[in-house]
Image (cartoon, rainbow, N blue to C red; front, side, top):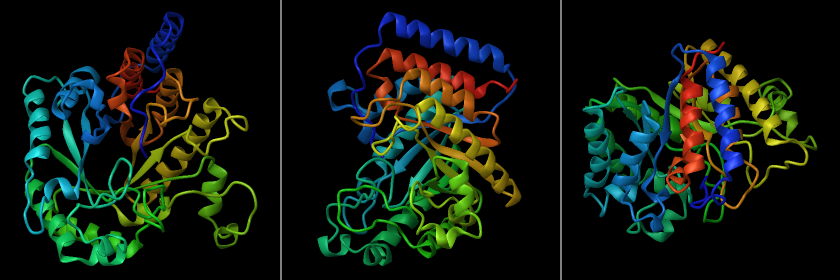
Length: 365
């Protein structure tokens, strides 16, 4: 899910003051006990080419300004495997070095969540090395069964299993869901493929949990419908339908990772505003947090919308802070903000993001 490299022009002074007033009052009302583990996703592919910054410089700046506790980093197959059977982790090691240097003087130690798999974060969603045969790349079954792909998974987990700041693994990204990409046909993976990769990760690294991610419906009633006895019949219903595969993702992983977006290309804001949709999403978190507890697992928000979707207006800095206020205190153990790379190009969004992090860390009143 790619977010715009360029958000709307600088906030007006009046809007910036309104955002600040909203955030300060929210933090004051919420109090000060410990909240969820808060951080962000970071992809070198999302760093603006026009910024003049390297990915390491962008990450370093975000670490100092956002002060996260967890950073999610992708392990792109093509980036670490420049040729079949040959692995080079230098670029990703460099980003991890940036975090470790920051940790030396930081009040909060930052840990990392590593995403391994061809289905990985940022458009085009399916990331395959240029050297992979085109015919093989076009058939997911063959691609995922290949020895080269298995070698990439194993080499990555072996390389980072002993990393002191490793927090957890994420196997693929929204692997059960068919998302928009640059290729024809479905990119959804069979559950057994994902289960096999989870087993591999646990076998090679039994010390770190594995999260499987998905998205869910806009409203709790749709999630409940998909989770109930009428689920097989719901495909024939007219009107809004359930989305994502949260039950399956919960079953497969040690934690359920939900990706939360309220303003997307398919969102009808005339039907329900962003503020209303944020409240709806918060109710779904209550539902899935309880389902996760019942399964003896945790609920994580692996992507919390924190910037506008590319070329889609309607999500504002105030919506970001409303989301933070609505989502915290819902039994979520980890919250990772999505779109923070864009904050580097807009002071208004950076200010809103910093206050959103404060809100998420504050105790519910």
